[in-house]
Length: 84
Image (tube, rainbow, N blue to C red; front, side, top):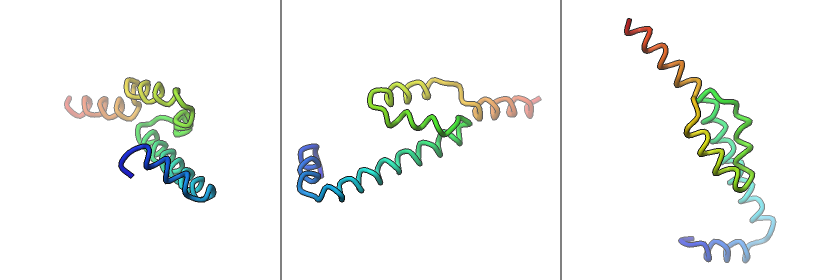
């Protein structure tokens, strides 16, 4: 499946239930990986639900890229304390 037309053709030729199962697995995997990442950063994992909303998902990823991450700030504070 190298390009978009082959992917669309694949989903058109497959049973609708199979295509829904594939989409469900992909969505579940994305949400699980995103929530794991957010939890490791110290942000509530429920924010990953923004990835489901088209258009808002791009803005959410952009906002998280520039937001302050609590775990990072805590590690930086601890590193400064150990240097003293």
